[in-house]
Length: 293
Ligand code: GLU
Image 1 (cartoon, rainbow, N blue to C red):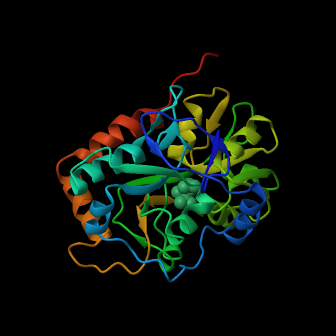
Image 2: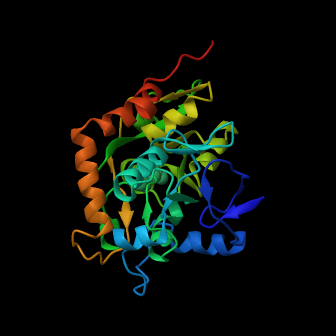
């Protein structure tokens, strides 16, 4: 067993995918979470954005992805890391480095995405990360590759039908997400409990430690694909355009990683690759599957 650098929880062993083991103490991570509760941390300064030539020379692209966010990055029952963001990084690697398997995946959480980039431990993050002006002060984003929407999930037997029904109730959220700010603006009278991952927040909802949980509809759909007894409120709180994140200070030359990723994303939009990835991982899940009564 080992702990992933920015994930905290022991995972693995994994097969068929390159994941770098390393150690980080839970206590250390706890303090870190306080610092990055908003999901932002200033860039370290000494670490530079990476170029495609550097990545080619090194022989692999290091990507920070979620390991617990179906359908974007998740450990499947066969122990393999799968999902939209995993396929996206493999496709980018194929286009930029001419080899699909040239990606090393490291686990990040919503609350550790920015520090994983700015510490230099990953070249890019592909982890359901919404492009926001606040985050754009500390990382550089690619063009958007998919748009999710913030939603709220409640147990099926909840009396709540609308957002306003949750005022005064306890709402569970994930630290370092846009979801926290959005929901607190909409429901200032609610009580809130933050968790370091969406899996922890959803587990707490299952254990009835809150009345509702909020995150992106795409991520909720992943939980509901494995769990009956929940429903999603119709109201959506926001658009959440996902982007890949990079260290600031890229050269913006034709060799810059972000520049080439943007070119590839544009090509993937045109040639239907992004639509195929969305159809493969996201569309079916968002429709939901019927649960037995
Ligand atoms: N996409 C939102 C964000 O970037 C919420 C879900 C997540 O944790 O990624 O904050």
